Amino acid sequence: MTASQPDIILTIDTGTSQSKVFWKRWSQGTTELLLMGSEFLEISPSDLMDTGLSGGRPENDAFIELDNGKAYVLGMKAQQMRGKPPTGLSKYEFAAYKALAIIGAIAETANLPEQFTIALSALLPYKEYQDRKAFHDLLSINLAGFNFRGRRYYVSPLVLEVKPEGAGLAQSRRNDAPQSFNHKNILVTMIGQRDASLLPFKQGTPQSGHGIRLGFEQLIEAIATRASLNLDAKDAGRLTEYIFQAQQNPDRLDRIARMVVTEAEIGRKVEQLQDAIAQSRSRYLRDLLDWMQSTLGQDLYEFDEAIVSGGAALYFKDELENFFAQYDLEVSWATNLQDQIHQSLTAPIDPVLACRVSDAFGVFKLLGGKVSRLTEEMSIAR
Image (cartoon, rainbow, N blue to C red; front, side, top):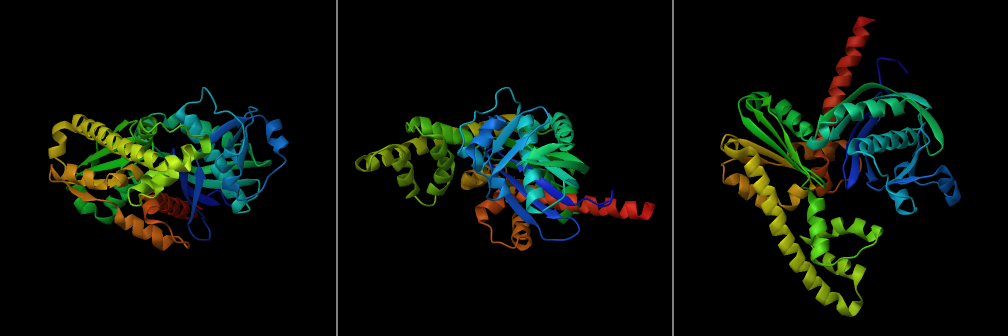
């Protein structure tokens, strides 16, 4: 291991629905995609030992212990335990501890020693991006020493940077066609599980961004309320996936109904769900488009192109394209990045997931280029 070259490079998007991570060994190996569930619980170390069970893929059986005595379980493991959601933690703290667990999971997967180096880019929604320094500092402090699944790690970040959601899409667009990017006004639109973000660029120059807590999560909550869905934690976690899939496969509504009613009542519950989805879609879409119009105002007429991504954006694909068409904006969905994801990964990836992770992949490519330059500069300096 040399000071000029990281053992691992990775990009982390700590989304609400799940954390999405691209990583690889710097010196060798192929690009990997790691997904970790969103569940996050605080427990006591004794609770962890009481389970008597451990094993499975590290990202599915993740728990960390910090030097301040706090212990957290994440993802699939958290679904099986009775811990409590941490109180008093800000969003950037959640993101930093998730990043710590992800780094531990990668260390175990890659069979790294207790001391290793990384180059990391983390993506935060624009609203949380305002806390990027606090996120950076908290993660840096804890990387100096933490336990993952009972093993101690000491991690040195050679690169540790934080970027706003949409940065990967924008920079990829700039790199693919720099002249075009620098002569157009482009609006990067990210609509994900929790947040919506707008990143405007005028003649290649970034403008002030905007963010709001108005993602797919809000639509799901409205549907659950209107349809009187009283779900336990495990079924609530499935609801988002089933609602999304029901747009193309209405049979998924039967699955939701079976979570809450007997066989004889399924038909009635499905009708209630259909009505709840229709009303909630209409209200959510109105809120989203009203926010975009009021936030951007006359600038909407000045943009030439909208680059759109995110799971919620994909769910409202037709409506968003119709909205931007009113302002004569050309709409793109970063399909070039999605094609590159398919080419880079050894295992097949679902097209919907490829859309959701395209921003993170764009940042991952940028990070690789940055590390290459730094490595070359250090070699020349020697």
